[in-house]
Each structure stands twice: as structure tokens, then as C-alpha cells.
Length: 433
Length: 106
Image (tube, each protein chain N blue to C red):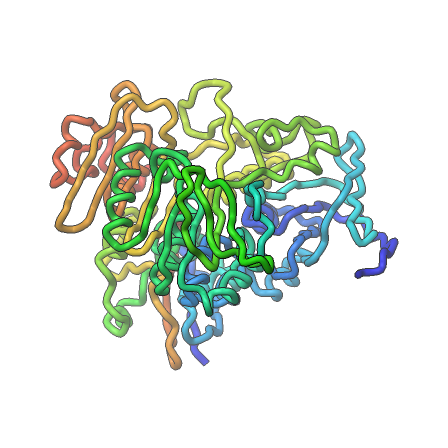
């Protein structure tokens, strides 16, 4: 127990709540734009700010260590007058109309600020089913989660992964690769249903099953089973099927951390509602990254279309816009969102957003294990899922960035390089978008 | 101690002492070397850690994988014969590597 103190910190120029990818990038970008006031970066965890994507992959498999995930050395923060505070949990914020205010931490510390940024991210969605609190039912969101998971693996032979999204499949591939008999239970009719189209889902299903992962679709989990002493021994489905497991990992999506914003009276709707400048409804607080519900940044997206993006690319690009916003530059967030997921030997790269697609083209090169789905809306390419096909990914991302098209008729032939059929005004890739 | 010399497109050089086993990208990012973005953290997915290797040192490095080769076709500044993705180059004990970062990575 930490003794409540009433320490009052000197006023900082910008208080960033959340040492997430977005929070860290905001601090870095502000220094790049000439912001010279003191910056305080508050992290809730007891780790220096780190990258999350490897937690379900390289870090879990022990191919990279914790130090490799650290964003910046301590010297960097010191040299740039960015104060890093670990283990700081903010419970309440009092904000004045001019943007300044005071944030109150759980330990009693008060952080006074001239401007405030919320980079509070999202947390793992919990499954509220009988037995959910059993020892051995775990989640994977933070470094501590990953360390905990690794420490449990010793005696584990059978794993159940609940959720066939990116986190679930990445972790399942990692665990399977480490010799664990792994079963993936997906509630929906296909894998990664929220992020990719049906063809890509089918490709993942076939690939993962062929490598020995047991994947069950339309799987309705009823409860977690225990050994009578509080440890999980498996799961039971609604149809009575029992699957033995000494470890159950749940990866069923995330919930944005909007509590502080709500307490502050900011508009909240599946995330903190922000405008194209990353400004929340009070006009002074910025909110960035996973927690922000923002106008669709894709150039040419329908007016009024809003979304929340959970990705590294968005955290970085959104933070840059917020940095401009805080220094008085009125740049609007526009860009081509992209995502990646590494699952065993499958490298998925997604360019663009599939919102509103009306047709697809599938390109498949069996020999090389390349598989690409191009998404079209009224004949115009809007997105692509590319598996082990970086050339396709790069071609689509570049074309989208330049507002070009890749005609569907020509793209059907998988031996044709997409770059060569891009309907373009110029062949010079150096011309900015 | 291994040293990596990062020269940006304006000719300014930063020398960074590196740790064997880390990548040339990680070394740059952790020390705040500008000119390397590394969005994907080194998982060969983004091509924003592109560097040009000093020409007489290209041959000293392990060859690139097909995936790295393909990713290099998507860099913001066009690739050259001495192009590599710095996330794929591991620092070795007595490395003294000179790299130049491109004008932009995105």
C-alpha cells in the first residue's frame, strides 16, 4: 500500500495521460515541432514505455527481450525535458475552459497542467462467464500480462484460446509453435471477421488448420471448468463439448478507456469523440490513438463517417496531428491506415479500410504462398489484405496514397505486378501524395 | 564497442554506441536518431527504417531475405543497390557501420 500523499507537482506545459504508443509519439513529435514547454508523460504501468505488438509474438516466444521493446532510452527523455512517471494512475481531472487544470492520481499526487492529452488506450474486454476468475484464465494486453503468461507455460500442455481475431491467432500460433496443443474457439462464423473479408478469413482458417491448430468456428463458450481448487482445467461449450486445457487465453477485443473523459464531461461514443485535429469536445483537450473516435482519415471518405482505429500506424499518425494541434498548426488528419499481423509463417499486411466495398479480386500464388485480396468500391480500389505479398501491399498503399486506381480486370492475373498496372498520372514514386 | 554512424540527408552525422544483438534500427530508435521511423518495431512490415549502407560495407553484411528485398520496393525514397532495412541488420561485436538515412521514410 502506498501512503496517500498530497504532493503537488509544479505546473507542466503538457500532461500526457498514458505512456502508450500514441502518448510517447505525441511527446516525441512535439519536440520535433518546436514545442519547448515541459512535458510530463504519465504511465500507469511500472515499465518504461514499450511497444505492444511483439507481446503476442516475438516476446511471448522469447525471441526478443523486454529491453528490445522499450521505445526510448532514459537519456532521450532526460535530454528532451520529458518527465516520465511510472505507476501513475489518474482518477480525476479538473479542467478549466482555457485548457489548463489539475489531474489527481490514485496516490494523492496532483499534476497541474497548462494543456492535457489523453492517450489512455483500451483494455482487454473481459468474458463474464462462470469460472472466469479461475487461476489459469488469462488475458494478453500488457507486458505484465505477457510475463505472467510466460511464467505459467512450464507445465501447460493444452491451451484454449478464446477469440479468433489478431491477438488470439497470433498468440495461438506462438503457443502452438512452442509445442502446446492449441485450440482456438471463435464465436463468429469466420476468423478475424471484424478486420478482413471472407476470402482472407478462409485462407487463414485453411493455413492454420493445416499447421495443426484446432480451430472451431461458431463456438459458444458456456463456462470454464475447474479442478475444485480454483484452477482451470478446461472449457465447456453450450452444446456440452468439453475441451481440456491448463491455460485459457482470452482475446475477444478491447474496450476504450473513456472513464476519465466521461468524468471530465467530454463527448464519448465508442471512444473519445475528436475532430480532425484530434481535439475533444471541449476544444482544448487532445485525445489520441486507440481511444479516439475520429473522422475517417482516408482521403475521400464519406463526410461524417467516424471510426476508432486500433493500430500502431494510427497511434503514430494521429499523435503527429495532435502535436500540430497543440502548437497551433491546423493540419487535418488524413492518411492511408495500415495494419499488420504476423502469424507463424503468415505475414498479413492490410492497406486502407474495407468500409463499404462492393467487389473483390483475389490473387493467389500457391507456389510462393502469396495471397492477396483487393477491395473495390464502385470500381475504385479502397483496400487490400496481403499475405506474404509485400509487393502487392506496397503497390496498393502507394496507389491509395496518390489517389490512383488499380483496375480490377488487370489485377486478376496474379503474375502481373500491381505496380505496373496502377492507373497513374506519373511513374515517379517520389512525387508526394 | 560497436558503433553505428548515422548520417542524415543533410550530411549531419550522429555516432551511436550499439549493443551487439540489437538491430541497427533499434539502436537508432532508442537513441532518438531522426530519419528512422520503424513503425512496425522491426517485424519487417512497414519499410520505414530504410537506410543506405556505405558502399564498401555492403558486402560485409549478411544477405537480405526475399521478404526484405520485396519490402524495399515500397520505401518512400527509391531504393538503391546499397539499400537495406535497418531492422534486419544485427549489430555484431566489432561493427563500425556507416549508414545514411533517406530524406523521408513515409
